Length: 283
Image (cartoon, rainbow, N blue to C red):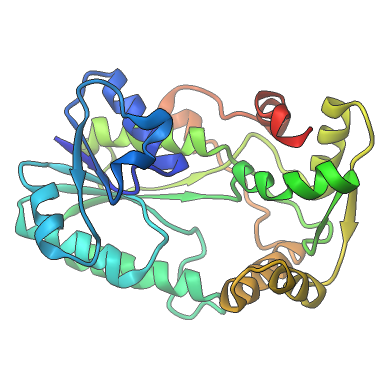
């Protein structure tokens, strides 16, 4: 049995679908089953209703499982609770979505959180595999309303390059690892798209697909933080986001890997494919 946490999210729901498609015993851990994509999971998927902050529900979800795909907003106490439950219930392997730059000394809070979770996982005695994605293509959906209204978007990443990755490819990698965890024990996979691009390249790809110019408007991290707060983003999140975007401008995300294809056997999608697949979101 493979348990997938965060099973109603973009990565989790696709991971569940792919595992079920392979005929593997799969359990989706959700807080609200009504949020499942399309209102339901694939036939044969076991649904466990649980809460990261209730150990009894976690233990019930982990019972009888041998592998867990750990996906969450990366709140240390919550992921640690899942890991501890996995230990209690005899789970053998955890596949965790993490951050490539996760260190205890990172200037970015979310990366320190990932480092804390990773340290607990390593100390747990469980087998594990870490999946570290670059920037998600799905983050572009946040630009969609302003793109529709103004034919452009703002960003404080300057001309920093990154290997943006489709969450569907992250899910495919997670499913491949969960299907044969012993083959990937102790490994960290860096998950990227096929090329290094900038937000100017994203704007050009959008322009080509939409048939009119989309402008990439560069602003400073401080301006971006203020704009996010004004738009209703919680101040701690806006501060962290602006910090990360500023690091991207300095080259922090300029790393590329072929691990998606090495694990799944399929090349990752590029940003033009992603935009073509989701063009309706931007018009």
